[in-house]
Image (cartoon, rainbow, N blue to C red; front, side):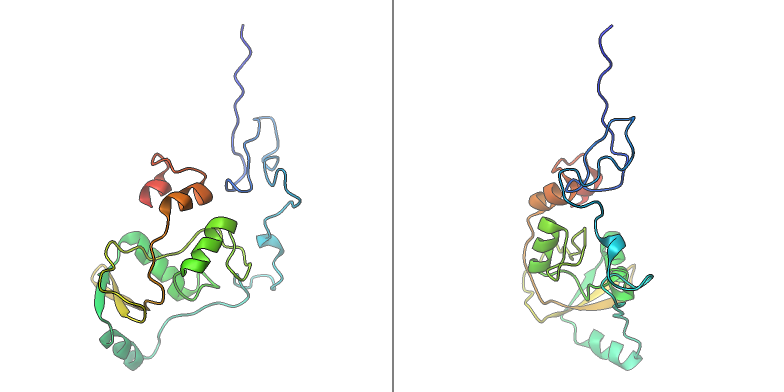
Length: 188
């Protein structure tokens, strides 16, 4: 009989930058950090205290004063209805789940994360967080946008950086493929 085909599997959570497939009989960690001089990604070895938010302090963007929230809303020049993914990103930013981010990534931070999985300040951050809009015509830096989800006002965004990311490069660098068969690449 012919020899059995070789089957490679990804047993360990990781990305294409740090994980390679392993043979079924190998340990789930055998594919981690192959050809690299490290054994951990760094998220487990941060210098902040145990239980501290990523980056050392929780970023809380919630406006608690009703008058201030009303004034921010009144200063907006355009309303954007968010889709579910965008709304999730906004809620994560507002509540500090994306600490140390204090807003969507600008082009410099985006490029650093796509290329090196690190923010410009060298903190580990595996995925870019941007607000993709189908039409930015008429928008300029400094404009305030009212972000709505399911008919409710959820945030005011001040546009600080308007640019077009290279989604093909993002897909290849972050997910290891530009194939639309990959569900996250498809959603890009």
